[in-house]
Length: 268
Length: 292
Image (cartoon, rainbow over all chains, first blue to last red; front, side, top):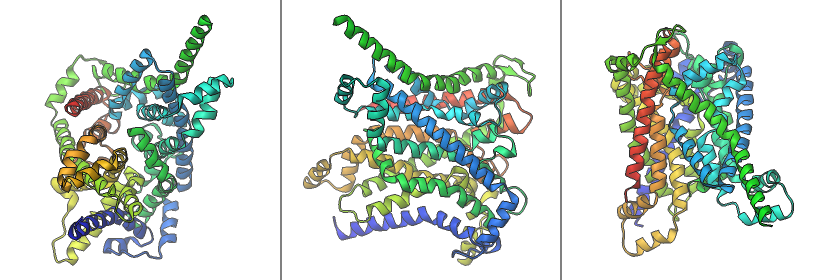
């Protein structure tokens, strides 16, 4: 590669990386500055973090929102991984014609826009007296065609010999799944965990509809509420945004490598 | 022995059904069943809980509703401008990052993927305050001696901010899919092309794109689907404004069912229209993707 081309390549990467990080840097700086300074365009970390935090907890029930979001997302992720991996494994390992047809039908559910089903679902859950419950928040996202497809794809690389050997050793089918399949599919589970947790944590439309009391508020709803009123306290707003971003950023950094591996397994 | 084998197979078959039943039943309950309900609902008219059968009157109303046409235009405008730009950028970035001699690979990848860690509401807020009348971008323009722009007071500049925000948030996400796809392509193919004297553009069009076709198809379908369902950004970044000039279809459906006097029947009819559009586009894209 010529020197000029190499230079152009790195320049493109540097510019794109800076543009990707800049809004996040802005957010972190703004969270530590006074609202007026944020408007003035101050782009260095300030000393107003504690005050912003005090305003934030005086305005909104931050700890409840954090706890709700954590609890909802963690339980949802756990159930989703269990049920979708079981289904994906079931579709692939025991596959026959009938199961393949069922799988194709399931895939069409991917095309169903959420806007189309939110009204009937809201009415269904209100009939069942489940509005404002954690279960109503979780149920629509526990089993998704995308996740089942990901685990079905990944099960393809699971050696059939292991299953046969385990059967000869007298291990039950459920035992094979939990003791053989789950431990070997770590990277797929990590990728699924990142995607599900982030989606659950960031979900905004459905909780806005189904969780209507202040007690059940989640982080994205809290951030959205910060915009109420005529003047916006940018320092407080950006601190709220920052706090809402930390958990997903940590999960992302923690599982980044296995995420890429898991996706690679899924798009093969 | 033969009989035993038969029963074993039968038992395994049954185990498979039990394994997949939980997931399948849940999807039927929270996707297919509400879908049928939405269609039934779309044939009813009336406000709140006073619903009665109205035939296709809701669908007739859609054809005459200027707000629906406006939101339809906005959604497709975002789709047509944003998705191609984003996917092209993602593809270029992925093929650069796939280069063997590239230094600091992990650093670039992390930087570019990082926007995906922010929630949709969060990044809407970040862009909202960046482009606010007294926000950073306008301060910057003022310092350069230019006139500040009231980004959210004009329909086109507001749409521009939404598109920019979408590209910022999703390019890295799609890049990871391309990068994974590229890693499945044997590097020797590229070596051979280089020895044969192929330039970067030829390599991209003759090797990368054809071999990545399934991944490109996947990202195109998911991006189209996502853009047609755009909601959080419309609500939190511009609140549909000025007027209703940046409002998306999902946002309008939400307002029709939960903000103004609830008209579930009409909202359901609009949502069926979205469903049909998503399905048609997905089928079209699959058809195009299948051609060789």
